Length: 472
Image (cartoon, rainbow, N blue to C red; front, top):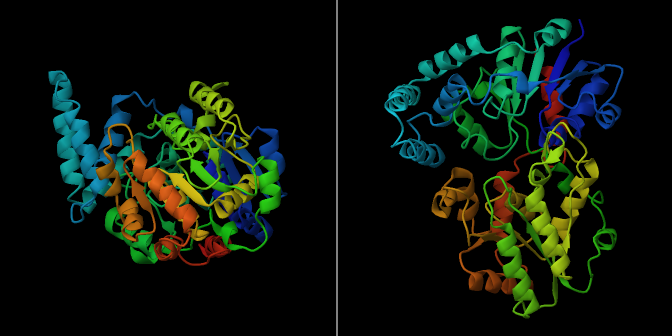
């Protein structure tokens, strides 16, 4: 019988990973039956872009799962997020567990009793692998089978997700898949997902990791046997390693109305979900450029995080924040904005393939990149573009000292390839230093690229697709 593979697509970054890479093309050419389960299953652009005789689109309806406000949902979510194998210290889990219970010191007696139950559950889960497995099975028993007709219709052999059931709603579809006899393969979406999302939310048969570092984290924190983990490399960055596929500097600067005779500072804004300081930093940079405190003639190009364009119903969830950015754009002629093209009204921040090539070119041809504890540190290191981590402000309820000690951030900062600044003067001094000498800290950036991008550079999706086809 023909093998059937279901790809669960719940956001734009997942689309980029599974569908806009060679993973989808190789699976399609192999002749396996592909089921794309997505909230965008009825959008014309999505169906036209990802088509084939052996490709079927079905509607993914995660909002039909239990309400996030329900006590049962919250209990399982908190227990999972605040638990980790206690043999190994985890800065993220420890911090947020303490903060959560601290925030509930003045709650009612009933809620305090429930919190005691939660604390006991976390204590047990953190100390017993058996308990963690039983906990997952208990939750799967009460998971609603929203997509049962789809599973019965296609009987997928393999269901592929981009998390270990730690991202919202992934765990429910994974638990459904297990009930219907499918094997589950998790392709880890981002560099921090193995240390900042808590324990696995569903039984996983196989996992694809970026690097050996991530592989070891999966073994330590998620109870996975070594022989079930495949280190495949980083699909999201593979286009950056290929020659002549990025937008040329001439075309890029023309498209974004940038001057080729000026130095280019590229500022990647943080997500507005938990960080409100983007406009403040923009005003600081604008005034410093205006007052010639940046010694080289320069221009600032700003790229809002895709989450700025999240749609809630038919409205932009962060329209107010976007309007604030547009006011700044009008105020300063030397600030240019690159607004990413968003395709879908059903899945968050789904962008066309051209955005990958444009973003890669922006990083490559900029003279310095500014960000805040971002995976952009890795992307900039691939192109040896100087990086400044702006610590003038902090995320909501999360001190920068805690951020710096998260496992993934600590690794990157320890290389010396990223310059962290805590004051305005440090920020401007570091920008000037990098504009004058772009080779500063180049060895550290090379180390970041080496340790964080893994193997199969430029062809990770091909190796991962071939691995998936070999699974029984």
